[in-house]
Length: 149
Image 1 (cartoon, rainbow, N blue to C red):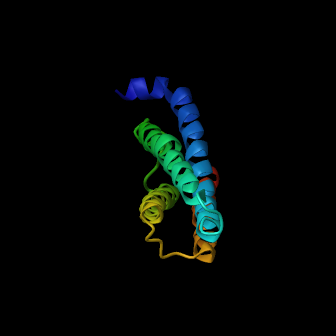
Image 2 (cartoon, rainbow, N blue to C red):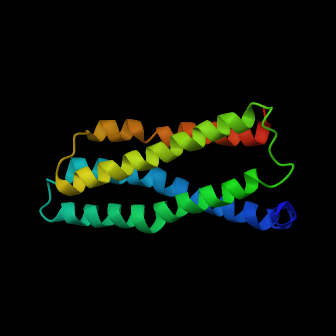
Image 3 (cartoon, rainbow, N blue to C red):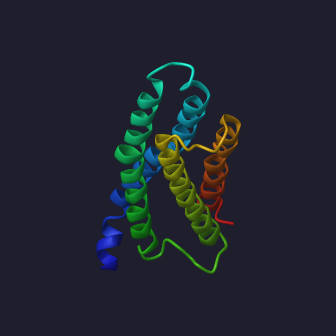
């Protein structure tokens, strides 16, 4: 099995990068949709269902598959021999940040359901602040992997 993972390494890495980029795009965009939904949907009749549809499709069609692919290809990389030295700090900081990113994804999914039901409790400002979470986590992940501290 380790020979197979080693031979697939370039493909696994490429698919991992593509899925991460797709996932991050959604993690950056969905909170911005929430900001506009919260701040503008009541001002224009019929706008809320449009936001609901956009948020649903972004989450279900792009973000969920991208998150799953990121995890699958990421775990394949973890199990590829010679790539990860668990005695160093970087794999642990990356793992913690990826878990944080996954938590954020699920938090967004719960907020989407709240918005669809008309039960939102977060302000536009709150969503703007939460929009910084994936940026901070992405910085931790990239520096962990590239600098390998």
